[in-house]
Image (cartoon, rainbow, N blue to C red; front, side, top):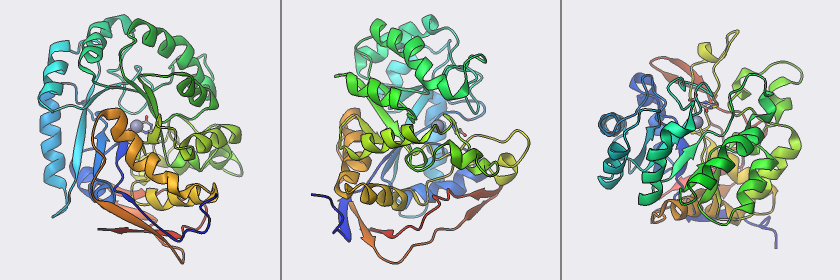
Length: 351
Ligand code: DOR
Ligand code: ZN
């Protein structure tokens, strides 16, 4: 039966399985926007310079902990940025010591601060073998970077050219295909019965490429992977609301200041941390699947990562439209909050 009669729903506190917190003043400004609703997050390592070694991850985690608001109950789950010179033993030790939860693979040049990413996948085989052995997941930015491949085809091409061969060579490696944007990726994940999951962002459940380009160019909807045509968005919503354990929330909330977004070559990234849970409630409710929001945001992620779901809860309450600030101020400049383009009727009450 559809869940459309619900006006309240209590769920386990959610986690964000893909988050950019940045550093310095930006970190201080954005971290409370995540800790308000989320208990844990997988922290992306694409700082400049990137977080490559266990030692760098420890230092970054300390900076995050120092930036937490008073009383916040939040655990940052750190990742290491995979390079062609990453030392497999450093990865092994970082995992054993609880310093790093996962390793992040950026194909070189795919997105913000990805210049030190991987060009030759043979060069990271030894690291991947160790990760398979110790059960440490690889988070993958799944886009090829070839200039001759159309930007809208880069995810589907990545699956065929990189992911399939890689998973054949290291079948025991746990892989998270991050921020999937296509029916192709959804199908690929559904066809696999082991060691593969995908995160889906809030914004890819809501926008398609028309939002970016029709009637004027809207930089605040530009991110990578870029939003695709409507049929792909619909496939993502179906995967998210299905309850299928292989799909879970990774917001990819990626703050850039307005001046960095609004220029001839603007940065990729959408800042969804503040209003994600209200946006998701709207999407799941519209699909008649509100109850499945708990699987997507609070249960499937920890299950894949071998962690317990959170004990604390949040309650989604339906009422008059809730408002979130259009921008937040940071020491680096204003950051625009994602505008879903519709009213948000679900507010979030925390324990
Ligand atoms: O839109 C994006 N922004 N996609 C990414 O992959 C990186 C992120 C960022 O760090 O700004
Ligand atoms: Zn990201």
